Length: 302
Ligand SMILES: Nc1ncnc2c1ncn2[C@@H]1O[C@H](COP(=O)(O)OP(=O)(O)OP(=O)(O)O)[C@@H](O)[C@H]1O
Ligand SMILES: [Mg+2]
Image 1 (tube, rainbow, N blue to C red):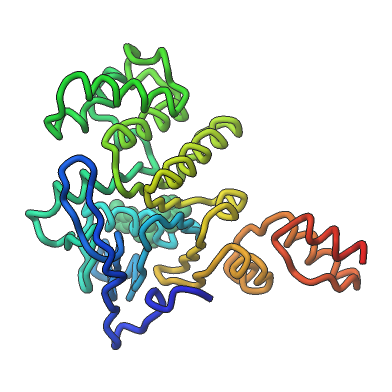
Image 2: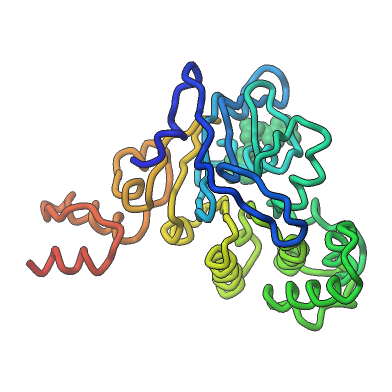
């Protein structure tokens, strides 16, 4: 599996990433290395049980990473550590070259690394949709025209044109989730962490948000998608499986999802082609595991 940096033991220090400098389009601020580096991070809510334990994980610039894992495995906690909402008990989290535990860096980290919360109610700040989406860019002190443009564009991207004057508390869960995503898009972040953005959306809405996330990624935004949907994880460059606060698997979708037995142990859903392969093998048809339905068909036709 790929990414040796991510699986390094905590006795051996994680190295800095690549030394390509990145210049942010708004203010010219640059940083070297990878956008997210977790170095031996442990975090506990109650000082007894670790929600995350010895996590070393490097997200590379421009990567689209899916984080999957069972309920309570630590996915949302990981997202909140990226955003400096939580600080590690031990180890360090470095985002865009800035350490989250440095108080002076928190504003800059949140400006450049947007987190869309699992529960959109946690993200709604103001009562009107337009005010909510404009809140971030206003805080950046951007010109009024730019704020208006960004807010309109972001609402359009999430399919919420015409909702500008609606009260946020009257929206459905899915609509709130879209507004929350628009609020983050309006910040024009370099990195976006989406915590189960499809959980409250209908299938069409979910596909729309995933499409937007891939478009952003193509435009250079690093994407971390926390999801329970394996079809979404299949489209990522990399899949990280979290289990009981630890990284259980880390690789490309093809590397991770063909491991039928391990996925079963971790009680994770499998892509359709893998489920079908497993069912065929149980009936004595020994086709190789694949995540690709066409490849499975080819193997069956040989
Ligand atoms: N605010 C909190 N206070 C105390 N414990 C918490 C809190 N938030 C999460 N936990 C605990 O930390 C662990 C990790 O939780 P987390 O929310 O990160 O999991 P998750 O993988 O996002 O789960 P889900 O798929 O249900 O969203 C769980 O054991 C959870 O009970
Ligand atoms: Mg969660």
